Amino acid sequence: MSELDLRSMVRDVPDFPKEGIVFKDLMPLIKDAAAFHESIDLLAEWARPRRPDAVLGAEARGFIFGGALAYVLGCGFVPARKPGKLPWQTVDATYELEYGTDRLEMHADAVGEGSRVIVLDDVLATGGTARAKIDLVEGLGGEVVGALFVIELAFLHGRERLHGYDVHALLTF
Image 1 (cartoon, one colour):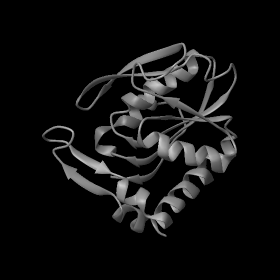
Image 2 (cartoon, one colour):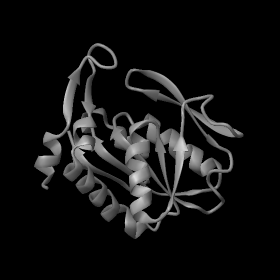
Image 3 (tube, helix red, strand yellow):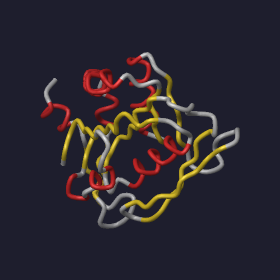
């Protein structure tokens, strides 16, 4: 399956989650077995040489891609969630989105000192979510060995907030 084929599986949803935003919906790619398999293989191809101990993904699509990637890589998966969703002691980070602010939490013991972590998300937009996840990992003493995305919205310049980190996206819009 080519990049063009994967790109064709991304659906534009105008005015979601608010007017003026064109949401890149990955659900058609996820529901197609061949496309989903290929996307995980391509993510793993990039991540494997970085030898991660864990993949960190935020809900909800970050769980889908992150869990599958961690399985393929043979490493752990660390979930980052909206406030109040995790049952143990947490650390948190507030971040800005292209359409507001939000907060993520992670278990305080989710990343050990020196753990090698791939920060993964479905979309790199403004870089706020990825930056928050990086801050969470580093705040617990972990090492971010890469920031990995299925899609990058280059016109929002999110990569600039991740300066100094190894950043990769499968598809760029």
